[in-house]
Length: 206
Image (tube, rainbow, N blue to C red; front, side, top):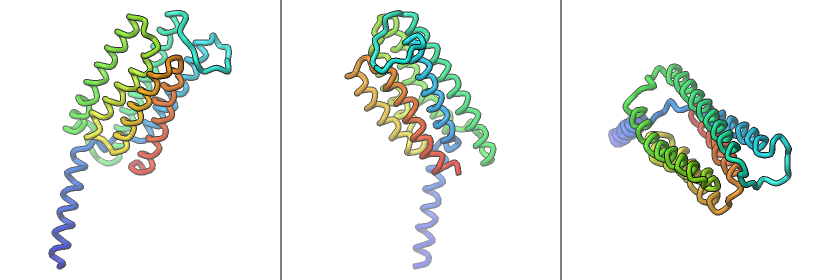
């Protein structure tokens, strides 16, 4: 009986070790929280840009001037850069604290799985911009981002898969509500990142 229990414990340990080796465990939940904060700050500034600093009660809008779109693209790009820089810095710090290497087979697989849908989504967004289809840019970004997370979720924590589902569903809902793209963008890249980042921080970072 004791040998049976010992055998099962050994199997569980091996299974746990294999699962951990296949996942990018250096990802910090705090980076998700901060990325969400950056996105909300960017959305707030974008709202000011759209209404030229005048706060309005409505959250629905349609672009009247192309320069507004390009300003929003710059804001989104800055949010992306800040989020990536924060993610890399915190992941490096977490890996160092745990005595692990950040650049592993898992991280390489993760990068490839993440980049393919993201690059495709970025190119598709540029096509939408060039054609003037501004109303579906936010839904497209959310959907492609969700697909990228889904594609990479095998090498990440389970919470990322649920985040991916949430982003895809939100993107589809946003596609049915043109004029509210900024709101959905703030929810998807802001609120959801903070929520799932907090879950991951509580479960894996403490």
